[in-house]
Length: 359
Image (cartoon, rainbow, N blue to C red; front, side):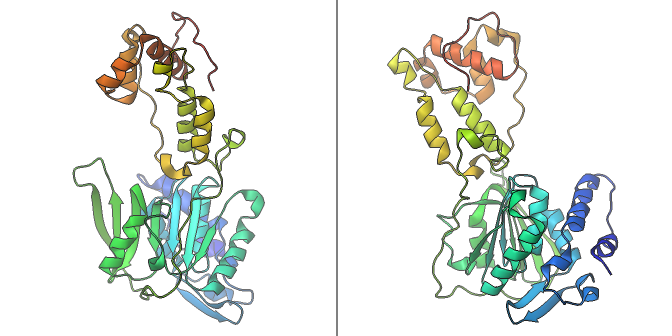
C-alpha cells in the first residue's frame, strides 16, 4: 500500500462545479505523503488505510490522525485559497496543516495550537521534511490550550478548524478568531458546525451542519499561561514589497496608499495626505492580513470623468463625504485623478504631468 494508492481510492469527482478545486485537493494529498507524519517503523499498511490511526511513541507520546477522507471533507468545506490565514486547533502531527500549506502557498499564514509538547516537536520536523526552509512555506506552532488564548489581542484568521469536540460556549469563543469574512468549522456534539461571516449581508453570517462525527472532547481551560497568537514576523519593507510573503491584497493596498501620497504646496490641502516617508512607516507596522480580501478590478471610467475629477473619485471609492471633498482643492483632486487614471491604463494625455513620482 502506498500514498498514491490511498489517494486513488478516495473517490475524487472532477465534475463541475467543483472539478478544479477537487483536482487541487487531490494534488495536495499526492504531494503531502501521509507516511511522513508517522514515526519510522509504523506499519505502512495501517498508515495508508482510509481510517483513523493512533500510535504510541516514547519520544513524542501519542500521535493521532483522523481518517484521510475526513480531512478531504474538511478541506472542501474550508475552501482554502492562496494567501489564506489558517488556524488549526489541535494540530497534532501536522498532517492537515501541511495539506493546507500546499493549498494556500507560501504567502499564506499557517498556525497550529497544540496542547501536547511531543506533538509540537514531531509536527515541526514532519512539516520541514515536506517544506524545507527554502520553500518559504511556514508553520507557526503554539504550545497551549486555545481556551487560555487571549482572543482579543491575537491575530484573526480567514479559516479556522477545531480538531476536538467543543461545547456551544466554546464554539462562540472560537468565532472571535475569525476575520470579518472568515470561516469556522468545529465538531459540536455529533456533527460539524460551519460558520461563515458575511458582514455585508442582512444576516451577517450563515451557519450549516454537515457530517456525523465522533471526536474526543477538547481539554477545558486550565491554569496554564495566557498566550497571544501574534501576527507573522514578516514586516513590509520596500525591498520585500513583491515577495510572496506579502499577500497580494496587502501589496495592492500598500501600492494604492503610496500612490495617493501628495506633496502639495498648500499645507492645508497637503495635510489630507501624509508624506510618503510616514506612509512607509505606517505600512511596515500593519498586520499582513488586514487586506485579506482580493481587490476587485477597478470599474471602467466614463470619458466624462476626465474633465470632472471629483466624479472619478466618487466612482472609485464610493461617495466621498462632501465636506471632505469640498476642502480638497481642485488642484489636488486633479493630481490624484491623474495618478488613478494612470493606474487604470486610461489615456490622460489631455492633462499636464503631475508633480512627484508615482511609487
